[in-house]
Image (cartoon, rainbow, N blue to C red; front, side, top):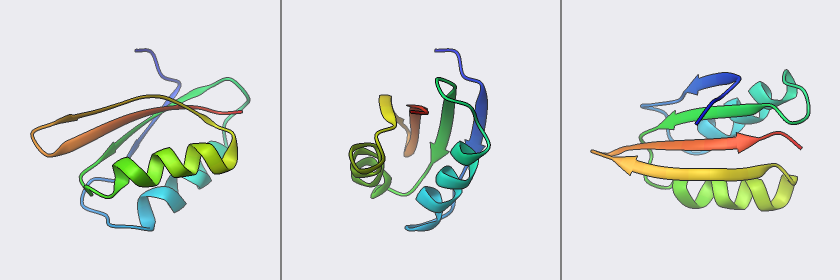
Length: 75
């Protein structure tokens, strides 16, 4: 999947991945896609809730060998 920006929050625990994502999205324009790489298992639920609460679209989430990848489209 194509992305306009990438954020690496591997090694960080809640709430830092969400806070850094929020900051990155603030610098992007509507419709752009942010790819996030994380290692916190709680990030799966955190990003679903974040998308629901903010209106940003969670396009996909996946996990490979303990690393999570999320694609968010800015509202």
